Amino acid sequence: MENQLLSPINDFVFKKVFGDNIPVLTDFLQAVLDLPKEDYKGIVIVDPNLRAEKEHDKLGILDIRITTPSGKSIDVEVQVRPQDSFCARILYYTARIYTDRLKSGDGYDCLTRAISIVIADFKLIHNDESHNRFRLYDKNTGAEYPDSIEINTLEIPKLRKGDTSPLNRWLEFFAARTEDEFMSLALTNPAMDKAWGVIKQLSADEEARLQAEAREKLRLDMDGMYKTGHRVGREEGIAEGRAEGRNDAYMTVVFNMLQNGLTDEEILKILDLPVDQAQALIAKANEKRKRNS
Image 1 (cartoon, rainbow, N blue to C red):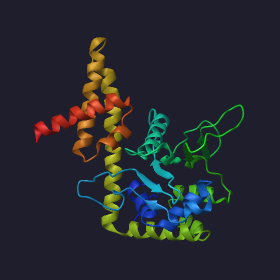
Image 2: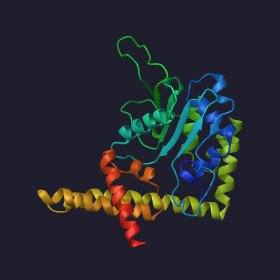
Image 3: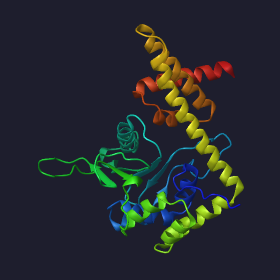
Image 4: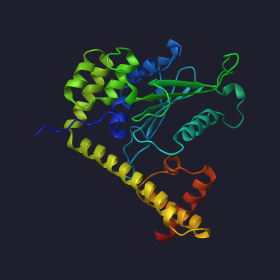
């Protein structure tokens, strides 16, 4: 019996397809962004965890971080399920990407545009557009604030059948599940042909399949624990006991995430909490881990 093909939006598969193939990544970026041609020549992947599959890296970082020759920072992230405050989180991390470029002693002229690309397998923005590009601008004059932030949302469920634009074809690629669908797209674009080759190879590799399936299972487990935290927080006591019950539930979720090898930053991305509250929970969970070790 043939193995079922792995999905391009599985985080392990996504990183293998785009993180190890600069031409494939470049073609995708050109379909999404409107940068000068020079910015696509010599892009560099700067996420050190992308290629190094460490023993304790059970889930892995969900994004691919890139810099362009002109210094722009690009972050590409896949999100397969809706999450509370997701838009706020994307804005927060895009702002972090922008400010992280400024090191001690640097002038503000070192700051360059920070760009996020979010590939969502659900409807995120309340319109019919599969691609929305958000920038800082004056609503009255249309003037754009220079060298700031940009957030691109790509929504797979909104892809348009029959649309042959490069971006829509990439959305079709992310939605593809059968060999016929992948092969049909591969015939239209050399980059997609290369990407399809990687998916086919990974799908036939037992070890790769196990890694992809393990990460998907862990992601589902984390999602389940996160939802349980909300439910327990609601059910644990009433009046003054409610907040304490909710914090205990979150603590359990955070502790289990740490036990499964997630980093503090990954947990911040998952939690639907104010940053300072999430950081305090992570610190307490880390203390608990040290006491138990």
